[in-house]
Length: 494
Image 1 (tube, one colour):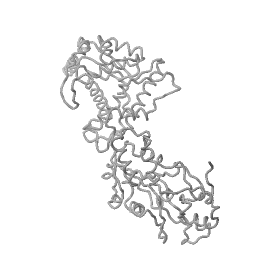
Image 2 (image 1 turned 30 degrees about the vertical axis):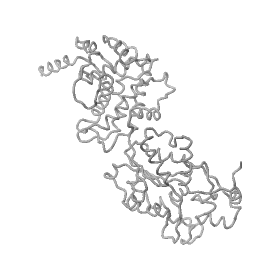
Image 3 (image 1 turned 120 degrees about the vertical axis):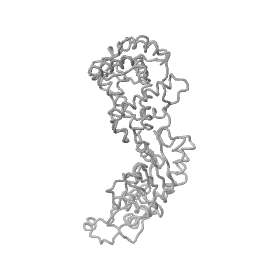
Image 4 (image 1 turned 60 degrees about the vertical axis):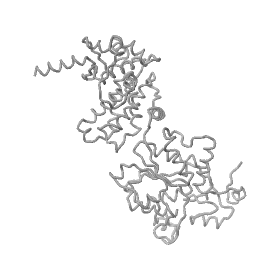
């Protein structure tokens, strides 16, 4: 069926124009009845954030998403486009998407007055009905609402009192659509005042023109609570006009966090040889690093730790393994525990430290967080009724043969640059490690075995049963008592 191309054809088709909020409500109702999730790609919010957003849309409310960085606020806002119709008709050439039946711009009114039912109609897709603006201190009223264009006035020989000299800002150009402002507190208070009429009366006034332009808009905002104190705030009258404030959060479970990272991280590498194998438990370790950072005494909790951190962390671990395989010519490419510690560049830039953390140093804090993540994952597996946060030493009888091997004076040397064959041979040299790992880790993938063996050794180190030293680019695991005696001998030698 051909779409109407003129105003007359649109009238004959019986097309009925509804407001954008009615449109979003209608389409959300249809999706809910069909059992369709309206926000594809949004994970972990099914029982918390998404129901509140749905309530706001059903109530035809404007709303604010409030949350720390990396909580999918912008992605949620952009997903609202899925609740718009595929296409809607507008007066062709209109700068503000004029409703053909009720035009508001002078250009559209004049065109319809001159052409009547022959006025050309344009159908715009829903992605053109969404606009967003990042709030920065240099944003002006002209950017958002509009201003008088003296060049247009001169070129068309128009008087400044003529409505056609107006150059519309991004908000009126979003008419009959969705407009989003990201990081609202960064917008200067005097600019926020300019939004008050839009929020309440749904109209704008430009440069004192004696006309008011009614707009059909759904306005959504995002904000970071940290910005309220560090950079700016939301003025009270504007906050009062925002119908709903919805609090976002970080993933509440490891499974949700793994799903987010699996969806977002670039892991399907090509053109560099064999694909990199990442054991499933590695994904858990990467996510637990973010969980540890969010509760660490060294990290500023008010700043948050973005979900982008585990994404870039995983990508960097894969790149570390990829680079090693290319240098050594390995056919087997698998991530190692030592790769986690060698990929701290993905962690150091994603956490804001408090004073105590700054005293320790960002690299040391990153190493500590990764170690705590490994310890937590290890203890959850092998300590009955384990409760994180308890500061006590645990015994691991099932791993005692491994500890005994180190106590007899043996050491294990590993680096992130060792060829795969040497890496596997070094781990297999530890008496009982391979058999215990197969029994305890239930490893099915051959490529997982070596990394799982290293995980067991590192887990024992994190529980102070063996010692780890950094010697150049090598990691050396040794007996704790022997290491202490060596340290005492060194002190005596001084």
